[in-house]
Amino acid sequence: MKKLLAVISALSVLLAIAGCGGTSETSSAASESAAPASSAASEEAASGEAAAELDYPTQDITVIVPFTAGGNADLSMRALTMAANEGGFFNGQTLVVENVGGGGAVIGQTQAFEAPKDGYTLMLYTSSVINNDIFNDTVYRYDDFLPIAGYNPDPEVIYCSSDAPYNTLQEFYDWAAQQEVVLAATPGHTTGHHIRLMNMAEDHGFNFDYLHTDGAAEQLLQVMGGHVDISMNTVGATKSAYEDGTIKILAVAAEERVEGLEDIPTFLELGETLVDGADRGICVAKGVDEAIYNYLVEEFKKVIETDLFKENMAAIDGIAEYKTPEQYQKYMDDTYNTIEAILPKLEEAAAEG
Image (cartoon, rainbow, N blue to C red; front, side, top):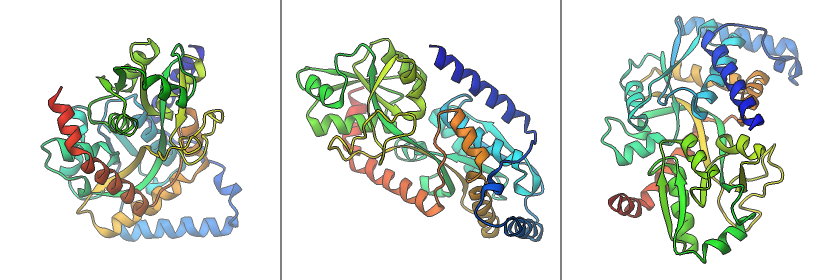
């Protein structure tokens, strides 16, 4: 468990630094850029002039994370805001993370939706907004938020205890086909991970029974303890335990093999079509001034492309990758349509408890 403890320690440092909101030397991205220094300086000056003409931002910007502190989503957003604050972006104003957990993220999402539409309240955007839209009585729909950028794709993996009697995806399939019931752990009912397991069970004719936990940490403990047969979550939630040797990852749902997990095949390599996972972004509620929205889009793109942000994400076993608002909106729309398509089965599963 030494590796896991080391990562937890690194995450604690990141949380502490991010909370301070301090500034430090900016990343070396500018010096490594192919563009001449004079060009980069001109772009920065132009951005500053635009902000001055817009008169925004003139105060700190709150970023609501609708989950409790310390989880993968929270840490990824702190990695992003820390890079923005240390890099002097947003006209020198500070991005302040506010954790508003509870209600399966409904409380924080509602707060972000109902905040003044002045550009000073942003939100971590995940597919949990879609789940809450569909399964809960909310005052918002998932498309009541405007994506600013995607910044952290986190591919799905299928994993099991290190003591499980299978070492490959095909071996698991062969084993599961012989079982009356396969016990699968999820981080919660109707989460994306639960839905992917349901899809797998239906595609292969397996009989999965689900142990729904309170989140990724508890889910991981159930797997590590051998209390369940299989589970699915993301690279960020499982990589440290895999490196510790306490779990086995059988496949990753990415287009290509993931850095640091080069020995793990993709589902595509194994003849499956699954390319999926968590995909975290940042958004603002609809109604914000268009000029402010465009400023946010441009500024966050710069932050996400800095070396500092990439280094912050690497420290938490995360992937840093920019997605345009259009690309992120497509991800959200596709996710919504996927859940809608299997809604009858989800409702049936909920009725069965």
